[in-house]
Image 1 (tube, rainbow, N blue to C red):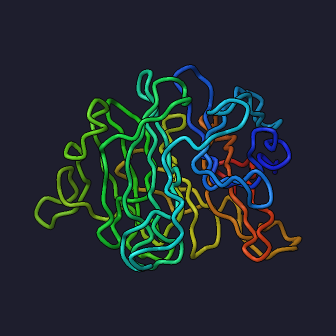
Image 2: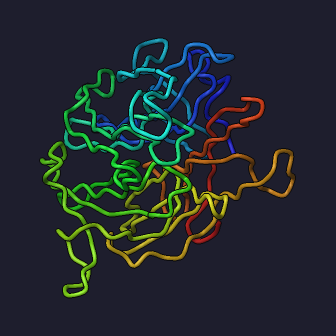
Length: 324
């Protein structure tokens, strides 16, 4: 295990933060997208922020070369930071914060899936909507697109992970809610149409035709589920995610994007603070570095102590897909 954030990123104005989803940019660098970020002791709240890395020796740990915003990582997209939870906690309304979910690069443009969070405490309406943003300059400047998916109460299209293959972008998504049993759904869109919500096809089951594209979405894997990361590695589809029921970061694999998917393998197990049994307290996330292989999987996992507020950080774990 290696600590990715904290003292090493303080000079970029990034001390306490989470998520750290990595995605390759058009020029080969890897962008890391972080959620609610603070410089120190709860100061300078921003989200999302982005750091870049050219590290190739992943076992030696990630080093960051630059930040979107210059010396200090700035907030790359508009964020209301309205903590009032209006009109009420259980219906969409004010925007508490904005967090990144996943990114994909097509040609010279990088697309980022972004969640508008209404309330961290709501059971029915944690999000207002999800939208796509884009950058053509290596992530320095971001533009919010009109492509948007509204939460209708437990909608399964709010928390995204996405990967390219054979001219399509495949999207696995779920509710932004670790208690929602709805599971994960699968959609696809031709790469040139990624900013056109109407062009997305759902993968669904019908009694007469079986599984097929273009039918209403049927969950492909069970919930509840937390953050997810879908990647195609060495010809294998790999899905890493936080499993709240197992209290662990797990992976599943498949030869085809439409399955069947393997049973989950625990990669990082959750536990109690102070445990010495190899478990990790208060973990979530589980994002795959794009240079990972089946035999050397690099996962970025968040850890937060809600009692003390510290640590609030991102950790790097090196594991493999045939052994947790």
